[in-house]
Length: 158
Image (tube, rainbow, N blue to C red):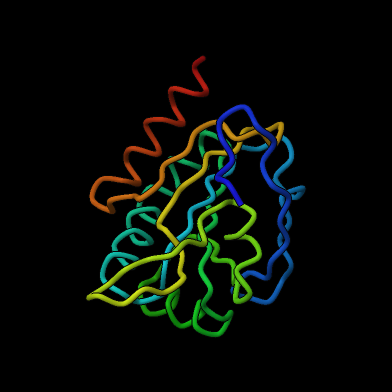
C-alpha cells in the first residue's frame, strides 16, 4: 500500500484500544485526529514519543484533536506501557498490521544486517472531514510531538 497523501481520504480503520474497545476512523468525524505509528511499546524512542504526546495532550484537546498511537503490540502490552509511563493517550493494537498496511507504513526494515517487516515511524494529521491534512514519515522522535502540535495550529488557522 502507498502512503496516503494530503488531500486524500484517510484510510478507514478499526482496531481495539488498550481496553479492548473497538475504535474506528468514523469515531472522529468532525474532530482532528493525530494518528501516529510506532514500532514497539516500552523501547527508548517509542517511550519518548508517547510521553511527549502525553505531555501535549491538553493542548491538542483544546484544538479539538485526539491522539491515537498504533503498534502491533497487544492490548495487554499497551495497558502495561500506559501504566508504567503514566501515558495520557489512546493506543491501538494492530497485531495483523492491517491499519499499518492501510496507511502504507508496514515496510521492509534493516537493522544490524538483518531485513524484516515492521512499522516505519510515521504520523498523520487527519482533518474533521476525514482527509489527510499532513504526514510525516521516517519520524525522528526528538521534538516531534511539538512539531505536530505546531503544524495542527497552522492547519486550523488556514
